[in-house]
Image (cartoon, rainbow, N blue to C red; front, side, top):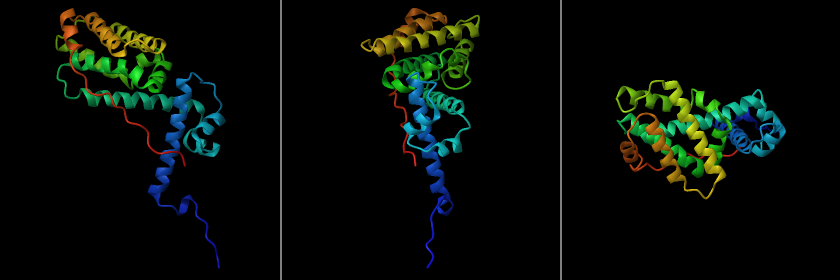
Length: 224
């Protein structure tokens, strides 16, 4: 009588795919936790231990730690960017869409601390990224200029100011945990709107508008 062994080749393709997805998600999550903690020089072995996967599994998904960390940052950018698109899709006014995204992102620094620390870790690179917040902010500000809602002579310079304000807000909220994040985010947003040429009264009105709930998807599953 022959005893058969079961390996990944004997499993249904969808089950194998789910296992691979869970393993990759665990590695991404571990990388994000190290990035958030500022531990960028952590060895691959420590990452796999945190993810509870083997070294071989790591190299089945990534060629290097640098590739993993890049993908971990990109995922945070893409998830947050997609969330902002979803929450602002009903807004026809680009100025309101921009303000809504800025106010929500400000609140995210306190409500989603790990994701926000990953974003802050990218520093100035966040301002020029073609993923996540930066391209959406540029799109909304550009549309606001076209609609006569903003009055900006140099869009690139304006975006540098906008990005610097957002990074400064995020850092401040992490350094001062007792500060009211909603009030701080709305105040900074008001200042940014006036820097973009909007009147103080209109900026205040927009920043008093109700916001949708900031609910970011959680990662499901565990490594296998």
